[in-house]
Structures are given as structure tokens and as C-alpha cells.
Length: 230
Image (cartoon, rainbow, N blue to C red; front, side, top):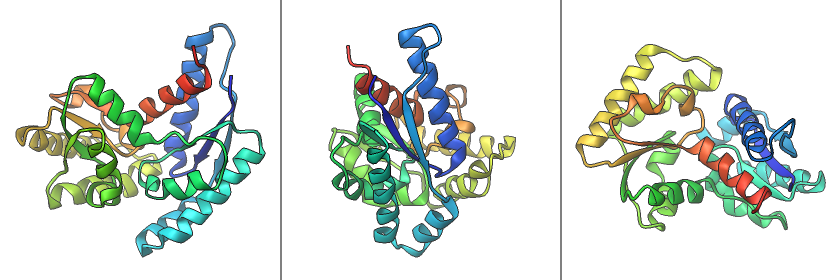
């Protein structure tokens, strides 16, 4: 099995999900007591969040590029950025190392396409929903991407940073997300991408009238497929 390098800590709540999923998927593939060969570099999310808010993406990219180089030096043979939002700097991270970076949006788009869907709603941080770096990557796979209206985007973003990143899961927030999802479906969304790794702590398939695409799981599955090729 190839060693999987994880650039995590954004937030550590979702990084813990990555670790759990990678090990469960490895056990399912290999059986017995097998677990994933992986190394984790966990950044201080407070530092990254401040750079995001200030629009200092170059500095944030430098932090993640340093993490990528450290993981490669530690033996990583492929890399994951364990957050959707920070794929804004994915090209810089990939350029810093000689091992492949598995892009989360690519793994997600392939799953949407395999389900036969072409128009999807996207939930995530305001950066992911409003900026082009993620939507354009999905569109390159032939997907038509819808995002919530401005009030919906504000609710989704607030719950991520003020609740889910702190491990807080509230029923009223789940209800608010359900409303946002229903509005996307009314506009023609055939499925909904949970485009923030923390959203899976709140929303499950039971909360949506259309299929949901859990990006953390899809990314982990892509990593195992690359680390354990047939």
C-alpha cells in the first residue's frame, strides 16, 4: 500500500473523519487487522482562517506547500488536502512536490458523473460557493453547478465556521440546511455536493430529497483506490 499524506487540521474535526474513513476502507479492502499507511501534517486552523479572511491566499498556499514538502520527506507517495476550500491553492501545493496530489473536486465530479447527473447544487464555505476555483473545476467535468442565494450562502458559511468546525451539531442548523437544499432542488438541482468536509457531520442522505455527494468520503475512496490499485 502506498503511503497517503494528509494535509489536515482545517478543521481537525474533518481530518479525524478522513483518518477514520481511510482506515475503514483499507480494512474493508484487505480484511483482518489491516489499516491505512498514512502520515498527517495538521496545521493550526486559526492561522489559516485568518489568512482566508484577509484574502492572503499566497501566504496560505505557502503554509500548505511547506506541509506538502514535509509529508513527502516523511515518505508520502500521494497527497490529499483535507478541505475543499483550500483547494484554491491546490496548484501551488502540487507544484511543491514530486508526488501526485489527488484533487477533491475531481473525485467528486467523477462520482456525480457516474450517477448520471449533470446539474448539482453546491454547499460549502463562502469561498467555495462564491469563488470560481471550485465551481470551474466541477464545470470542467461537464457539470452545471448551482449555489444557494445570498441568505442561504450566509447561513451555510456561518454554521461551518461557528459550529461544525468546533464540533457543534445543532438540529436547528440541520433544518436550515434542509431548507437551503430544498431551494436548490426547486431550481433544478439533481443532486447536492457537500462541498465542505465538515458538512458531513450535519447532513446525511436522509436530509435531502436528491442524492448527496459526501466529499470527504469520496476523497478518501479515491485515495484508497490510488494507494491500493487492483
